[in-house]
Amino acid sequence: MLLKTFGWSFAVTALGLVAAFFFGGWTAFGIVAILSILEISLSFDNAVVNAGILKKMNAFWQRIFLTVGILVAVFGMRLVFPVVIVAISAKMGPFEAVDLALSDKHRYQELVTDAHPAIAAFGGMFLLMIFLDFIFEDRDIKWLHWIERPLAKLGKVDMLSVCIALVVLLISAFTFATHAYQHGGGHVDKAQTVLIAGIAGLITYMIVGGLSGYFEDKLEEEEEREHEEEEEAARTGKKRSAVALAGKAAFFMFLYLEVLDASFSFDGVIGAFAITNDIILMALGLGIGAMYVRSLTVYLVRQGTLDDYVYLEHGAHYAIGALAVILMVTIQYEINEVITGLVGVVLIAWSFWSSVRRNRALAAAEAAAGPDQKSEVSSQV
Image (cartoon, rainbow, N blue to C red):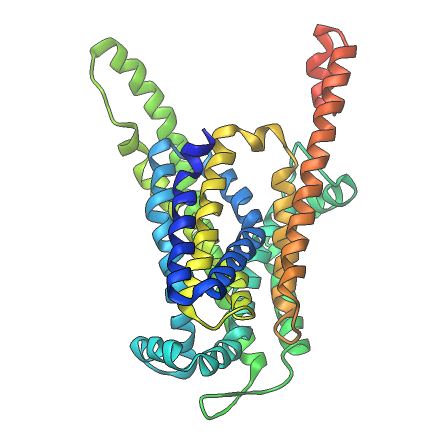
């Protein structure tokens, strides 16, 4: 099972490291290895959240996510995205940006640094909305009761998450973005840039999330219809493809996963510039890391890990909230990428350990209780 799920990741790792060695020797080999570890640590929360969505999709779309999706993730976010940033920031064509990235790496990094406020605001708002919508929802299973219970009550107020996100954006724009910065030969108001990018991130979340929710409901309806048609097929011998029935809904959920991956990739792409300016090494290292994130997502789904460790999803969303705050702070202040990665790892590890303790307590309580009391014990732990 492990080799089947991670086989492609192992193969891509070997090819990527060999390619790095031939490209730049042992130094390039080490840089790619470090970038791979950086991407995995920064995106582990991405895998947990993705698994919560991917488990609703059938095996066909899980394979699409792991094959076609990885092409989008690697070539779209890890290679094309940094080039697009420079092209837009410097008001040049994409081919000129590629030439700049290959021929003048120092200038390329400067342009990406100039574009960071917009990137941080867009990604920060998108991730903040994911966290707020999760934390304001009233759930049967709560991890940090003292936080989640009162917030679930507040969540009954309509549009509260949007209002809070906009307040955070305003505070960030006029607290962290009070200075103009050099851009395209003149000075541009950073606060205006942050506001526009943040609103764009908020709109993107609402559009993609709305479409995903709509088609998720459609998927549930089609699954019920599929079950009915399967019963009818047992009587008539007629068969109908499950993939065709769930295709439209699963396709939009697949798009939602791709947008999520893009948002989670912002910190990894920007953080990579602290290690290397070479987009070839960057694409190799982040691409290897992205493969492991994809494989880990599928592994979590197929092993039922999220069902066994019920607090993992909570920890991942808290990590998302922390990452959103960090992105907004980095509009003005630099934060070491190690800190960013460790915050997510610590929160997820904490939630995993809490899940283990819960499972042990549940098993002990059920062992002490009679068979008629097991369901009652499960609801109390």
